[in-house]
Amino acid sequence: MQKRRRNKIALIFLLVMAVVMVAGCSPNMSHITEKDRVNGGFWDKFLVIPMSDLLDWFEGVLGNYGLSILVVTLIVRFIIAPLYWKQIKSMEALKKLQPKMKKLQDKYKNNPQQMQQEMLKLYQTHGYNPASGCLPMIIQFPILIAFYQAIVRNPHIADSNFLWLQLGKPDPYLILPLLAAATTYIQFIVSQAGVDNPQQAQMNKIMMWVFPVMIAILAYQFASALSLYWVYGNAIYILQYLLIFNPLKRKLVQEGATR
Image (cartoon, rainbow, N blue to C red):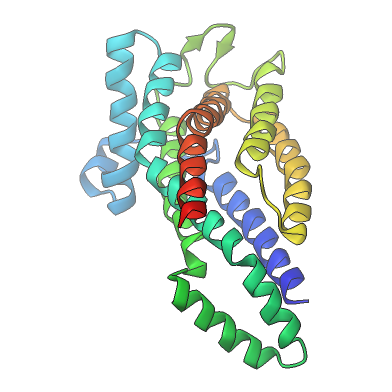
């Protein structure tokens, strides 16, 4: 019962964060002005505007905002890579505790309060923090939303072209929405491989289909620059996971097995 409730909370959390992302990257936001640079708040002056300026700088070097978005996305993804790795380590630590947690749940199934106390003792004994899996995700969202806003509020990006795209308008051929959905789906597959908790696996299966469809609908409506950023970000994460995170995870599992 408690697992189902936690799964529902996690699902609601993901949906709420998706809504926050949508609100944060609304195409109707005003462009960055000199007044924003002088009198803007912390969010604008230290996150959105520096990222927007970075996009302009790389466009000056590379000659195209499509390539500039790729480079800055790469930088952002590598900055938050340690947060992703922390999440992965947290998931692996939780998997090791699953058998002991199951025993406690069976032993104290008629005494929920005692079961919670024993669970806390188990976490403390093994140095596991239940919040360690969610905290990195919460920390990284402001960075991602700020980058979204930097793209939307940059007055030069909307009129720029890249390949077949006008970056300020939706993709007329629907290629980007399909790529956004496909890369989101693949990211779910690679990042959730090896999940052996039935309830968690069931929730992941639902999100694996719901989230890509939602992303495709948003990408169909939003400027191509935003969809391009999303596709870039997913592709970079998939490569990071396959080339960096997964080998590190296998090494972590092997080290745990030899202890």
